[in-house]
Image 1 (cartoon, rainbow, N blue to C red):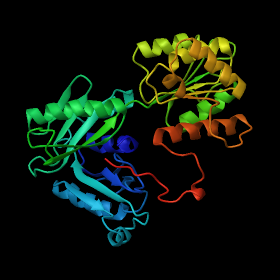
Image 2: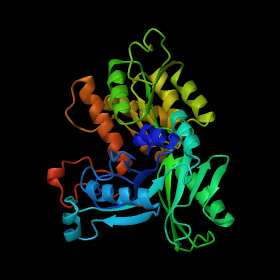
Image 3: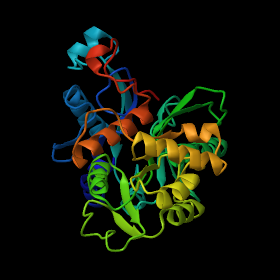
Image 4: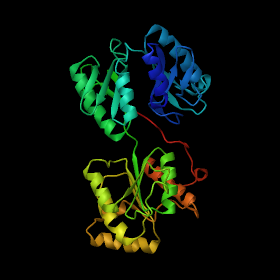
Amino acid sequence: MRDVLSELTGWWRDGEPVGMGTVVATWRSAPRPPGAVMLVGPDGSAVGSVSGGCVEGAVYEQAKEVAATGTPVLRRYGVSDEDAFAVGLTCGGIIDVFVERVDRDSFPQLGEVAAAIRDGTPVAVVTCVAGDATRLGRRLVVWTDRTSGTLGSTRLDAAAADDSRGLLAAGRSGTLRYGHDGQRRGDELTLFVAAYAPPPRMIVFGAIDFAAAVARIGTFLGYRVTVCDARPVFATARRFPDADEVVVDWPHRYLRGEADAGRIDGRTVLCVLTHDPKFDAPLLEVALRLDVAYVGAMGSRRTHDERRDRLREAGLTGAQLARLSSPVGLDLGARTPEETAVSIAAEIIAARWSGTGRRLAELSGRIHHEMTD
């Protein structure tokens, strides 16, 4: 919904009904992830995408009908190869799309949700997409400290709020299944949780030319990028125009302070490009003890070996040291800062999705990993 928020809220404020299709589950090589949205406006215009073009026509017609009737439906596209071809899903994937009418009556909290998304305040929208017909389309909005709306049962609301906050903390959208009264062992009801969390962080330590390239590609990948260096003459916004912020501080002190303030989480990636012992040794002592997605450090193999010895002497365990990606990046034969940034980004992506980093031409099986609920 984030991609179509401006158009959706504009029609909502004007009191116009909108047909909205949301991808709620995917299997195999589905072209768009859960949470992808397509709107059909009151003027018949289409905004957004649920399949990159594969099933847009079918969803468009369904959304027009639902906008007129107000009766939500869950549709599956690509159930079989024959059906997939019929709707244009040539990639062979399967997607479940929940289609509903959005207006002031059906989604009175949309204004608050839109404001939270724009402000970076974590919020989750929980919608009943399958099960009891009387609850289909009911909605619960979940913030970290409160909820609004109801799914039709106090126990179900409580269970869904707790589990949705877990998804929200991980920044992940997906489905949850319960019994009619919130029993976690039941599967009579399917809820889709659209989680809108702030973007994950990338912190780049070391205000060097490589850092500018890494910051640029980090922004491109959707990270909120911070560049940190203790030297004010180098750590300037002018040198790093693609970073969201540039911080002048000792790297280890800054990272420790961010962690203590709760601004580091399991999605955070840390790129240590200082390759100077007085900076990177104390920094990595802090970094490798944190629950983060990735810690990479630049340097030669000799620098890496010396760094590991220092960290081992500082008390880090073998398991903690094994989390260090050093020398940083994948072997792409990179020479320039930009090419090196691509190799670092490739390693981050591979770590996130358990990729091998090998050439696809050398592998068999599916090209794309499954995206499931």
